Length: 242
Image (cartoon, rainbow, N blue to C red; front, side, top):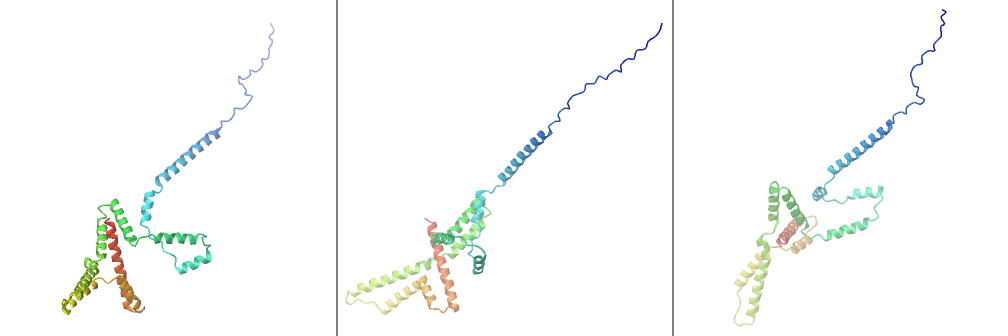
C-alpha cells in the first residue's frame, strides 16, 4: 500500500480585524464643563465677598458726620490750579449754591451741630461717652452769659423809667421836688446796672476809634467775640428748651 501526503493549509488566526478605528473620547467636553463650573464658582465667590464687604450706608454717613469741614484753597493753590487745570464751567453756579446754603445757617448752627454729635455718640456708646458729654456740657455752661450780665441792661432801663415817671409826676405838683442826693443815688444805681452789660454795639463802636495796631484793639476784638459767642450759646440753650 502506498502512502500519499496531502499538505494542509496553515490555520488562520481567529482575529476579527476592525475596518475602522474607534472614535477618541471627546475629553474637551469635560474640560469645558469644568471651566464653566470654576467660572461660576469664581463669580459667586467674588459676588459673595463684595456683598459681605460692601460699605454700610449708615457707617459711611457716620464717618461723614465726623469728617473735617472742607477748607477753601489758598492763593498759591488757586494760582497753580488756574494755570494747569481747566476750570469747571459751573464753578460760579456751585459757588452761588454754597453761599445760599451758608446764608441759611442759623447763628448757633455750630452749637446745634455739636449737640447732634454728642447725642449721636451717646446713643452708640452710652457709658463710654459720659465723660465727653459732661465735658461738652460744662463748656456750654461756662460760655453762657451770667444771669447778672443778662439782667443788667433791663434793670438799668427799669430804674431809668422809674426816675422818668417820678420826674413827670413832680412836674405837675407845686412844692414837690426830688433832692440832688436822691437823684444822684438813682443815677448811680442805673450806671451800675448798665455797666454790667456793655452792649455789643458799644464794643463795636469802641473798635472803630481804636488804632489798628494798638494792643487795646486786639483785646477789644477778643472781648466782642467772646460776648457774641456767649449770646449765641444763650440763644442755643433757649431754642433747645422749646
